[in-house]
Length: 192
Image (cartoon, rainbow, N blue to C red; front, top):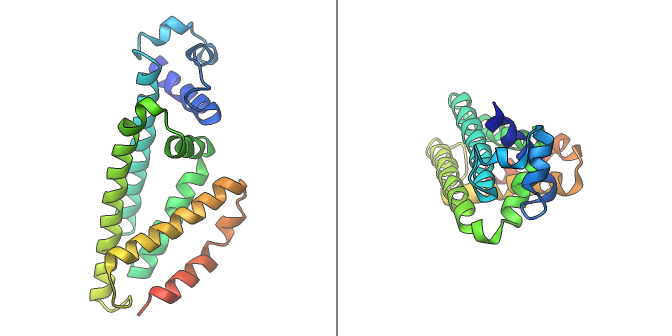
């Protein structure tokens, strides 16, 4: 219980203040323990930060996998739209996790940069391949225009990243209401 509580509190601190701005003493204080008690669960601040990264990444992997399973029987356009919308909703439903990922992607601790970003790049590469396969199926069925499925997948993910970035930068849920219009513009250029 204490290790899990430390992770939850650490996530909030790392999200709000980043790695360098967070101290183990602050985390311990918010958990209701003394700083040395953290070392019973985590060897160092590095170790705790990496545990938070892994916890948040695992949550994302599980969510994404569930979305892919839930949309498997949908038609091409519905599936792509539901995946698109679900990924945005994932980051909106927990602003603390969203803020954490922004800090990890944009300002990772220098000494942990490669350790943190390489698994995320691998996770992203897998996602691009999944979306590419969906586009290949759409091309084969004549539901999407003929073209390079990898390029289409990357365009789709750039659109997704753009919406997520706008939401992060503006802290405005207005963009979630714009999803259908944004999607219609994208789909007009993609469909057969």
